[in-house]
Image (cartoon, rainbow, N blue to C red; front, side, top):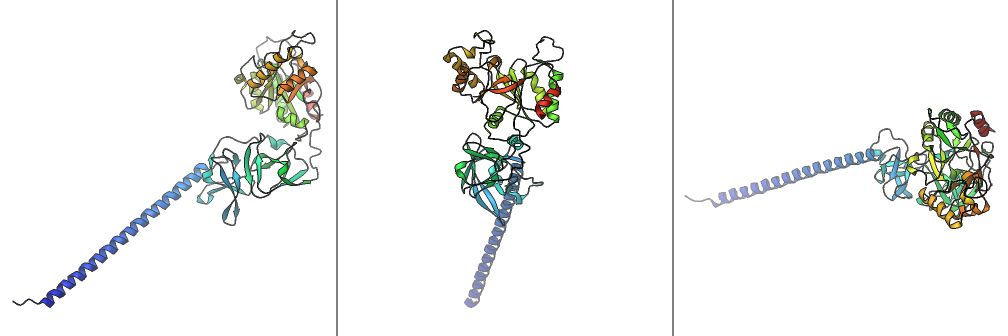
Length: 425
């Protein structure tokens, strides 16, 4: 039998071609399957990334947020977000409301501004900025900052910087800084960083306080407790009626820093403003429920060796100094004899500095029994206090001696009508 090599060669060739074609098909198919698999993986990864991003946006959005690390501030230019400055870690800002956060909200707009923060640069917080400055009345002055200006908090700590100039009305005007509202905060800019100042018409002139009262309470004795028969003991009903009047008439209740700024003419306060003070510390915790009920602020001048500060913990109660342990009669030969007027300098300074250290370095002091002298005032200054309160029964006016700030003493028969006259006249 003759072997037909041509036929065999043809068969082999055909087999090779088929094998190559099959191989090519298999490779192509494998490649296609691989590409499809990669496409599926990529789409899954993209979907996962989008889901994670959306979860991050929803998780980080809140009406109030805290900057989680030093971050960039952006402004929007058409559909792009361009760096416009920087903001420091832990700064609190308020955001514009987003009803239903979506992937389009990866940049959160800061309330009442044209600035934005990236969603992954912030985190939710329950801490809110102090809004007391909203009660202050603006000065008839507008400033425009330089470019690349740094803004600070009241303690001189850097908050953020902005590349472009900012124009704003002045809320606080002290020796070295202007205070303005910016990025939902009261912030301070150095006067040397201001390019221009413009005087405006004073639309607040008839609204500002020219003087204001500081009032003094001592002890609340709760119903059923007859142990105090002094005229400086107050009933629950009296305190409730006084505080209800202040609340119902929207009277702005001050802290001591605001009083000092008022004296220095650094802020302008509304006519209906008052400082509530409480002396000594005995039973002073009984004021707290009334302060919190009516959301009023007060200052307790505490004899700091008598009671622990923790006993008076409330966001509505400021604690200041009434000495550490010099609220004792008969030590000195004049008046009721408070020791601050005749003890040696070292003893007095040690007491005053101890009190400040115990009370978080308060700047405010109150003389025991309203008794003071040039000697004691100089020691109060040396101890680091920036203001001191006395009696006197007159109103506080700008420019007065900040170490002789007067107050009206309230007694157990002081009426709401008397309080009304202090506030409205």
